[in-house]
Length: 116
Ligand SMILES: [Zn+2]
Image (cartoon, rainbow, N blue to C red):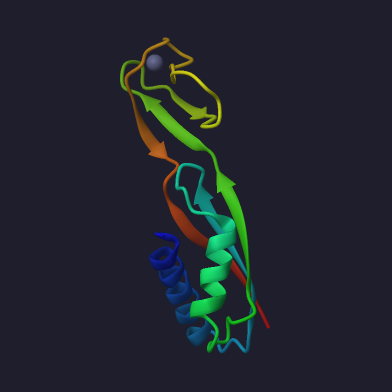
């Protein structure tokens, strides 16, 4: 259910931008969402339509671009993308190490907005 607060914060960003730019209507919102954030596209669109229904963004479509998960190896400092759908343990391609931390993959942000 954490799509709801996320969607609210997206709407706030969009409406702030719209206010500052004399926007009549928001048509499309391009989002970048890390693959590891388990936000469901369909639920985000539904929540968005619900909370935006009395605003100029009421008919906006969410266009969600998934960003790959990136890890960095603690042993050799190599950064690498991870396919989170692949089975098995995550191993550094540089040194085969197993000590790594998440660099990106959980974030979300508004990349651009199409307006009239
Ligand atoms: Zn490594």
